[in-house]
Length: 105
Image 1 (cartoon, helix red, strand yellow):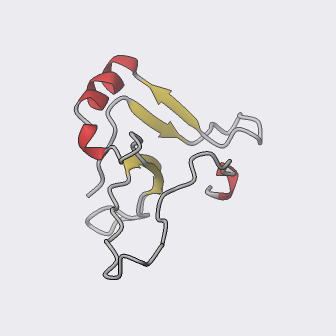
Image 2: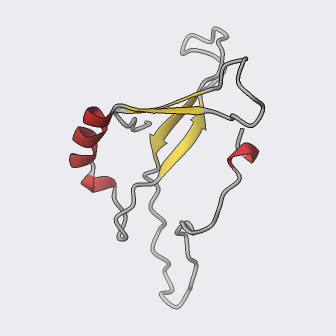
């Protein structure tokens, strides 16, 4: 089940937007601050909360077609601890690496 972030929303750009605009993010400062104060449980050991940009299913729960929408949700995945502690698989994101968001859309 997705964990939504109160006060942080993602929208597709309007049809009138320039080609380089891939989406819009709105922030409701008060709601986001309140949500963050209760979201310590989602922080990783470095203090980051990972957020995924996801696409909804193209049908509702009854199977009726609908427009798929993009949304933001907390990434709660925790890598399993390797049985062999000598294994070195780094599952963390490189937060200093630039990501081309246009390839996600």
